[in-house]
Image (cartoon, rainbow, N blue to C red):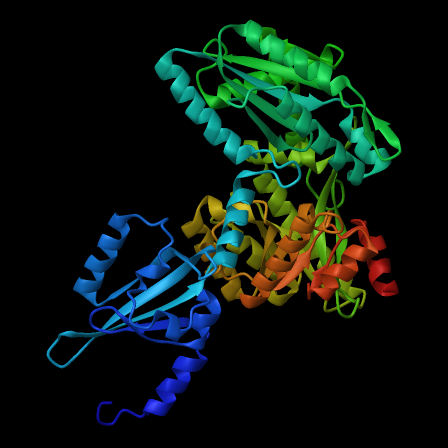
Length: 565
């Protein structure tokens, strides 16, 4: 002990014995002289069994000699090393641990002791592996997702170009799938998608890729074909397989495919062109009676023409934006405080009814709006309208209900977002704490530094911030914890199956615990059953939202719901 050191030997011994980290102390020759109870609990070895031994008896055999060489080199130069390593317990089981080693030297600088402390990181590695899997796989079907598809296709195109090969891209859309969802519900639709995914995998080689892009849209990449006939044979097999009825519970369901095929290099030499042309071919297959496959041809640009007409209709609707007369309107879905059952917030959701097309699903027009940049004026209108409705709600005597508004990536990149929100709040006499802005996980990761800057400014204003669709993107938790967010919104894809899928239940539990450890509120979307409500409430989820409570409602109905609750 050094003079003036307030720590007695008894205190240090108590800390050594009660530490939750395993601690091993060896002498200058690296022979074990002391271990604590946590070491024995983790490895199974007592001091009597290993005293005087070199700690290398813990080696798992899974670590290279170069690794140990680098570790000892760092120790000799810096007197400290830490990192991940695989070791072996007394019972022979191998596990990953986080290890820190320090060298204790005497007054002359000679090594006196080595002190190693470590913890079992099996659970955290499993969680990290699960999150990594989620980043590249669709949680419903376990197929590769869009991100994985794009990476695979880019690599396959590079190989095809280098080796002068042909490649086929097949875009598959299920015919009339929406009718199944609308009439029987998402439970049956999801079960059908899982069966379709399994059948698609059976139709291709192990070297081919099957991915789910979203909804009922799948893609197959055949990275090496001898001729277009190879793609024809695979498409015919897929048509036959998917045309077979699928029995789900008491229902016999049919999901025939419309398949569009584009070929490298004839139909395009980059991923974007091939996908667009396969999409055009797929629409041609639908227009040709469905349940068939079509190759891309120049005349299929008719589909692109239809899209342009749809975009034109969207632009026309935007030109007529006004509170009094607009094809757009906001509906509001209540957010319920889980503990008290009180409505504490409303999420503003955009709806579009076209004069001739009728009601248009947000899934159909939001994507086009984002691709064309039209989401910017639409998003700005939503902010103004949401603030106007919030002001009207307060004038009707309803207070302490926060308005949640979705913000797009385009808006986050706009310099006008801050001034727009300032203006809307001033116009309708609102305080920042009455607003919540929701940003999707994927949007938050598109331009991390710029996103953090704008979110910091919004948080400094006092506006609440939420990460929407958490769990579906590919974000870094290390990055998310540095964002000034207040809420995580657990995506509905995990909530809807938690009663039947142990993995989804575990993900929900882990995400809620993670969010609370980071000081965040957790909001669960897509709550549709009392069992889901009870499960999420028991885990401590703060806020619940979904059809179990209410669908998104027109303004007057939303007010009536709040007043009745």
